[in-house]
Length: 294
Image 1 (cartoon, rainbow, N blue to C red):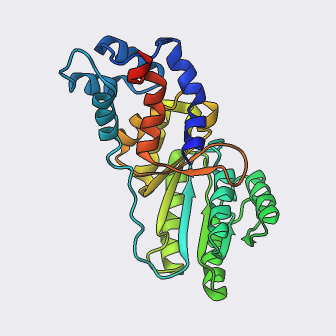
Image 2 (cartoon, rainbow, N blue to C red):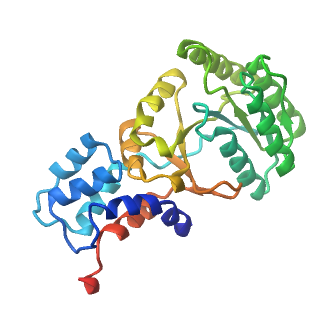
């Protein structure tokens, strides 16, 4: 697992090297400020981290404790539920929502669970087609309708079918954009209500997909979705293709929501559980030298 997370930080590490080409045992506050900003940690959070450090020479362990503190909310506890477990997946178009759903479905299937997909993004025909292609490729059943149909009806039918046939998990896609944000909010709230009618307390988990290449600009987007519908956890996609890996600290700190997984490639198996210790250590390895390296 650590190999995937470390590999996904490659471009972030390259960005850090432009301001800190040489690893050292200790850094000054000014040097660390430049490093964190280059990794796309939000300026306000960088200032909080730096101002909480009183030492002039900052070691790996000092910075490690501060970075881990920003990720205090990244743990997730699954709620009690009666099967099937329903995931509702939200996010803007282009964030990698459909591909991430296929990765999550693949993960469940590898765990021996029976999975059903619901193609609830009826706003875009391409979304239905793409999710259907993934379902066929992974040999996972899908409930889908035509573009323009009621997405709430798709969600209801998917859950109802899963209950009748003894499925363990249902993953429901949703539209990433409607004509206005108000329309999107109303659509998502309606899906939420219908899911609960179809199966008590569903959806059991609402997951927000965030495009890692957007960095800190994704925070306001995430806050909007959280206000619309309430988010239980985040999956960050395309982390392997961005130099903005440090934005994970800002996102987790600003939203106080758990980061469930990070996308580390295009294949179904490229969904890595987020581990804050491995993530922080992977970043620190690029910054600090070991004692014998000095």
